Image 1 (cartoon, rainbow, N blue to C red):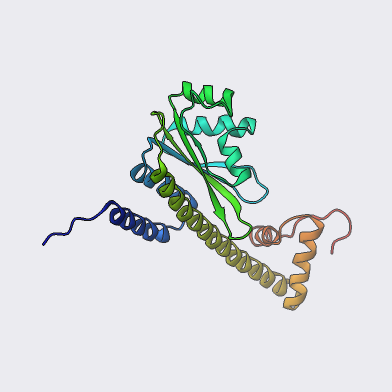
Image 2 (cartoon, one colour):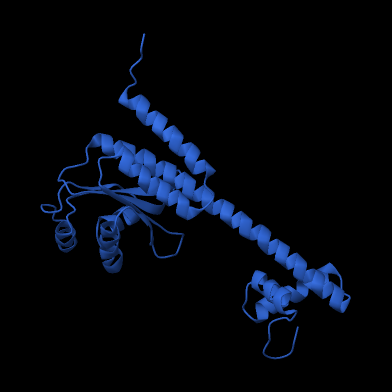
Length: 240
């Protein structure tokens, strides 16, 4: 007896495959490219894109499936108005059924409609539970009016959640790698100072830290300069 899989089963299998694929990726660029590529397969959209940002920084266009998406994003990031900006600040999904009849952002909608985009679905990437912060926005676009229904919204939310976790994990691993690398550099620089000046580890670290403070340079960069040039940064005034 053959078993016919349901659309729900197919969706679950596709998301399971996506989760495994995202888990195996190591870079942020690869991660966002996989997310927007999956959006084209799983949703009724012709174009997709992602904007992401860290706390306190300006949103950046991370991935697009077509140049028109970059134009749609830039129109909003340049003026700080539009559904993407609203999604970012309000942490809520914004649906535009038809850019030719939606009047919330008339100037932006007219330009986007002229680009051939009629339906827009912007979904926030929310990190955290009780006090969630927006780490990005998944933008979905179609040249057809009223292209996105309730099922599309539901799938988009699941995809956004997968994207949030994957991006956060990738960033965390990158930060850990940088921390390990910085620790190695500082240790190597300390070894140079200890050998050259016959001082112990505590004193060598204190010297590096003092030069870092006096030159307003990251400790890692002070260590890298010492390793590369065998010299510490120049300091205005008496040396530490």
